[in-house]
Length: 222
Ligand SMILES: CC(C)=CCC/C(C)=C/CC/C(C)=C/CC/C(C)=C/CC/C(C)=C/CC/C(C)=C/CC/C(C)=C/COP(=O)(O)OP(=O)(O)O
Ligand SMILES: O=P(O)(O)OC[C@@H](O)CO
Ligand SMILES: [Mg+2]
Image (cartoon, rainbow, N blue to C red):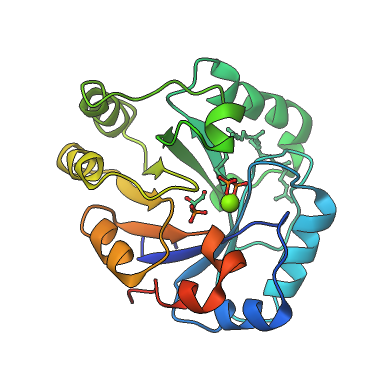
C-alpha cells in the first residue's frame, strides 16, 4: 500500500482537526492516511482518529510510536526504527520490549519496519530518539548501509516541522537503489511537494493538515 503511494497525509492523533477538515483530507486524492505522532499518542486519541477516519474509504495505517496505543482496525502498521540514534533502544530496543509483551497479538503480514534518518535536529522526534546529526559526508554511507546491507523495504527521510534540503534528497535518491524512499517535513505548497517528489517515491504532508487544510490539499501531486 505504501509502495504505491505518491502522497500521504500524516494525521497526528494528539492534534485537533475539525470534522470538516478531516472530511476534506479523507475525500481528497491523497493515497493514504498515516496516523502518527511523536508524543502524547494514547489509546484514546488513536481510537478517536481511527473511528473518525474509518467513516471514509481511504486506506489508513498506524505508525506505532507507543506500544500501548495500538489496536486492530488499521489497514497496516508501520514500526519506526531510527538508524541515526545514539541509543539502540530507538532502533530496536523498544520494539523487542513490545514483542515480548504482545507477540501473541501480532500478525506480521500487516506490519512493516519503517527505518528513519531524522535530519531536523530541532524536531521532537530527533530529541526523543536521541538522534545524532547525519553529515553530508556520512549520508551516502547511511543510505548505502540501509539500502544495500540491511536491504530494507523503506527509508524515511524525516525533516518533521521544517522543509528539507533538496541536495540531501538528491544524494539519498542517488544511493537508494532498491529501498522505497519516503520524504516528510515542512511541505506546505505544491511547489515543495513537486520538488521533493523528484527525489522520493512517497512524500508526506503532516502539520499542514492541522494548520491550514486548504493549503494541505494543494500539496497533493496525484
Ligand atoms: C491488534 C494489534 C495490531 C496488535 C499489535 C500489538 C502491538 C502492541 C504491537 C506493537 C508492535 C511494535 C513492535 C511496537 C514498537 C513500538 C515502538 C515503541 C517503536 C519506537 C518508536 C520510535 C522509534 C519513536 C521515535 C520517534 C519517531 C521516529 C517518531 C516517528 C516520526 C513522527 C511521528 C514525527 C512527527 O511527530 P510530531 O509529533 O508530529 O512532531 P512535530 O512537532 O515535529 O510536528
Ligand atoms: O509535519 P510535517 O513537517 O509536514 O512532516 C511530515 C512528517 O514527516 C512528520 O513525521
Ligand atoms: Mg507534527
